[in-house]
Image (cartoon, rainbow, N blue to C red; front, side, top):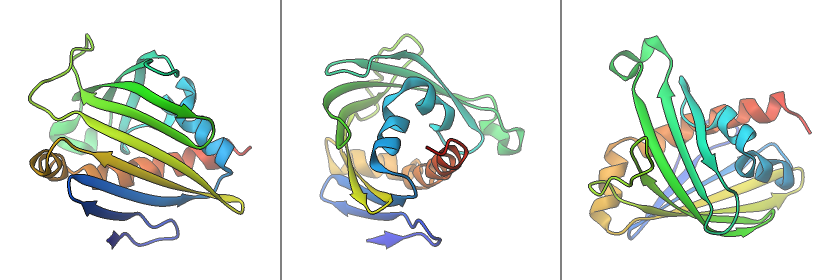
Length: 175
């Protein structure tokens, strides 16, 4: 398991074809769950620093679709500036405020899944710890090679940056 430095360290481990990421957030479980389950809240922080997210469709229910676009708006990110990254998720299980399970895929702007990229089953577990919440994310890939492909794309670094955005959102929107 590796850890990043700082108060809310990101812990990561690889278990077979699963990537497990753990992080503590300074927010109650219900509030953190809302940040993932309400379209406007999610769009306001989702994506790495310098990127903005627009939810084209957000149906937070079993078999509901979340179709979104992340766009780089930071000119300092060089060749990434102006780039779009489309994704499509299908919610498989929702246990308010404890767990969200969904399948996440790269897609095009029309919501068609890109076959060359792996689809990932993601399980979010929200665990109350006093006034904080431990978030455990298990991303299950179809193969170790698919996991390696996404690791090489910088998924851990992107998630770390994204969680900094979530920290800012939580601080600005105190319960």
